[in-house]
Amino acid sequence: MTKVFCEYPCLAKVMGQEFIGKKVKAPMTTYEHVYVLPLPTISMTKGTAVVTSVPSDAPHDFAMLRDLQTKEGLRERMGIQLEWVQGFDPIPIIDIDGVGDLSAKYYVEELKIQSHKDSAKLDEAKDKCY
Image (tube, rainbow, N blue to C red; front, side, top):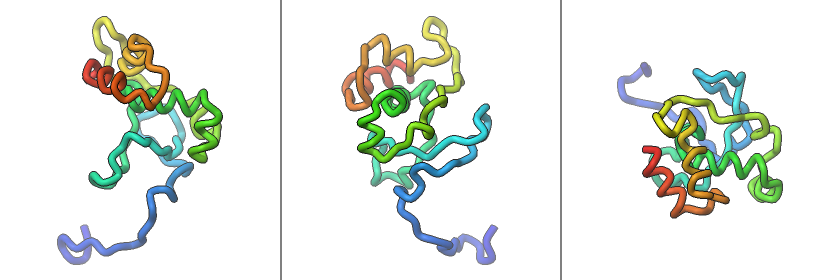
């Protein structure tokens, strides 16, 4: 829907870092808004490197959210304010027999994953969830 078919003029250039901490609308959630947060496990060379977090069913997302909510030092190092993560709980999407409706939490706890940096266990949890 541009003036010239398949031509998309650049309106502005921004760095992804500029979005961190900005309020955004999250459709189909109970939250009026959420905040844009960094996720170190995202490849910065693939696509836009902007993704929607699904902490209910993605173990990496769940672990990062949990760490940001509970580890003050991590928030300070990443420039994250507590209000950007506090009170934002995963929203159940899929109910899996024997696991429940928060599969990421289930497997993170089952595998005793302590940190968003525990990549081997998080990959295992991801395989189980997916």
